[in-house]
Length: 339
Image (tube, rainbow, N blue to C red; front, side, top):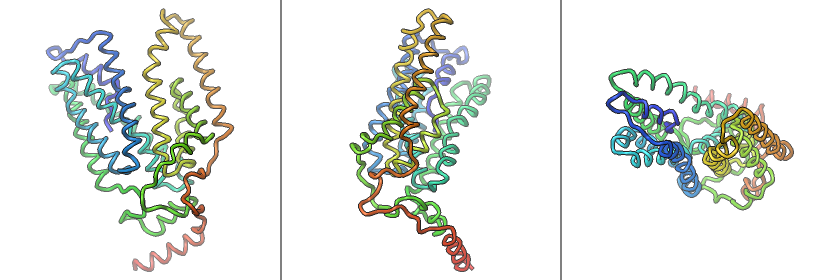
């Protein structure tokens, strides 16, 4: 998903001479902050519509919004600062669904054993986006297409990729035509045996008062405050294992925490290191390191690797009937059926 990363603003301000846009320090601050503000609103909207529309529809809608906003960035820059700021806001709104959808896809399509690998592979989209965008942006800025070309390219790529996603993806494996019985059995092994066909109502209060979920929020707070990404996969896997089909809501709250920290961090830096001296920055990093350590302690104490009680339908159990021998028998039967 194209997400209006901060380097895009730099591309705008460093355009070719006859299309250079000059902004004050305050305006630049708003161009950066509008993404986080949009993300916060996007999270609130997503929490409401995700249970009703599901991963496929929600992710696609947000992706199309992202693609259209990216395509409109050059036009917005020509129209003026407020139009550009509005498009940055819309890009931020579209970011909100990225990680909640990632965890929802993992919860429904990965086996419990492989969920960490799923999260790791899906999380690579952030790094791959930067690896692609930075050199391609440089090439466009020095070409006859100018800086606008990268926005048109990524906008089109975003729209095409989400149309492909919508055409192929289904919210659960049991309704996908390309999933065999054997594959479905492997995916379901270790998960609640009673898998509802209808979307369940999110147990908000049960989730928000769960000590393990609270420790996940604490860990996310420390990670966001300290720009620490190493705890991301561990926390995300814990979210999937514990909250299962409701992982989108838990990750949405974590994303909200990240957005709030992104908004207040510039103010915190301005307060703590107003003179930008090495001593001020050193003391700030010591403080941040302390916050990271303290906020990880609850997670270390309470972290588990099993579904919470509020993820189970009434009378449901954890599926263990798909043992390795049974899976082998099913694979043989499937081969004979095909032959």
